[in-house]
Amino acid sequence: MDKFIINGGKELEGEVRISGAKNAVLPVITAAILADGVSVIRNVPDLRDVISMCSLLEVLGAKTNFENSVLTIDSTGINNYHAPYDLVRKMRASVYVLGPLMGRFGRAEVSLPGGCAWGPRPIDLHLSGIEKLGAKIDLDGGYIKASAQKLKGNYIKFKKSSVGATGNVLMASVFADGETVMENTAVEPEITSLAETLVNMGAEISGIGERTMKITGVDRLEPMDISVIPDRIEAGTFLTACALTGGKLILKNAYADHIQAVIEALRRTGVKIESGKDISIESDGMFRPVDMITDVYPGFPTDMQAQWIAMMSVAKGNSIIEDTIYHDRFTHVAELNRLGADISVENNRAYIKSVEKLIGAPVMSTDLRASASLIMAGLRAEGTTTVQRIYHIDRGYESIEKKLQAVGADIVRIRD
Ligand code: EPZ
Image (cartoon, rainbow, N blue to C red; front, side, top):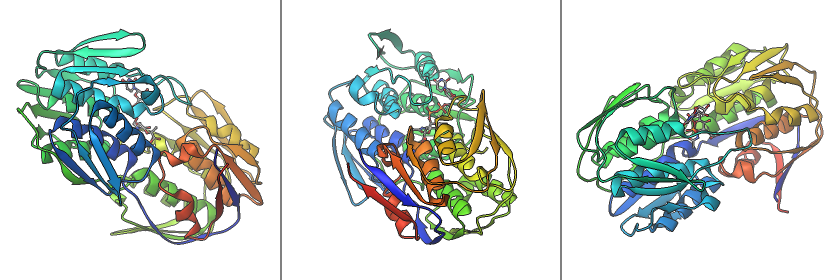
């Protein structure tokens, strides 16, 4: 398994181009199932999760081709509705095929995704939403078995905001007879971009970007030709990394309005951020502590919680970080403490006692964003940090070591 060797203490200086968003492209790929023909998706990041999702679509009978950030998907030949456990267990987002398969074919057999590094990840809201559209859903042998003659529009109120459930039910509803109204939907930019993609394909959706969306069923959709929005979490990760190491970064192809909560939080620490066409940050590596509570969009994203904890570990004062979305997403804390941080966790709160410095050591990645926090900490730490099991980071960050090397970081990938 590959690992990163990082020699810390170097400032980051220069320009970073932000890639297409993992959490936007994954549901857009499954939306291609809804239209017969060849869809074109541009600005696609070269990530393990993208490759996994393309493999899943090929299992269903689609043909995919991915080169130079352009992904084409021919869904004409889809003739299999079974998403197998060995693919779904690797990537929870595979469950996004459920909605489009039910929308277009009225049949789907999708393995239950199982848990992840930080605990159970239920999909009850996905299933109840699709059932409200008239589907019959059974759980049998670890698989979701769903079927419907023809889905019918209905009123669906989500008991809590869920990105995945909103995306899945939205895709299931585009051909449903009549009108569907979804309330308390997620409004993350990735859902807005999915809805806009579906409209690009011919769907009738209103209330995009709001917490109530209305969908009027249509008979068919045309293949898409769209470009993926920039990855707001990658952008936030590079901003916090530069705040932590010190230096000056300019982020190209990033949408500041998608990460206002992160930008405001960084400004409260005292680092300098300008946002216009690009986002620029300047830091001397010293900053005030800022307590944080994660929330659904437009609040501070849970996917930035680990990175924020890494940064706060050496702030000029103590801080508390609470994750209201996932109550047990703290597997990175024990590894950060191996680097000299002084963090304790109680329920869904991390209590950070700031330390003077971090000291390099061997650490282990446990999940995607935890890996990012360990890399950031290694960039700050004195001495050498080895980050193992970096296949996690390759799921969601395109060539992260190359992007960091280009702005002065001393990081190399050792292929094991
Ligand atoms: C998406 O996951 C993202 N993944 C996650 O990013 C992100 O952390 C999460 O949204 C929250 O923003 C993708 O988009 C591929 P949710 P998703 O449904 O859709 C509970 C990353 O690092 N819930 O919004 O699975 C759930 O347990 C990944 O890129 C139910 O109870 O998240 C959680 O507490 C990690 N029942 C909360 O809702 C359900 O049916 C929010 O989950 C679904 C979710």
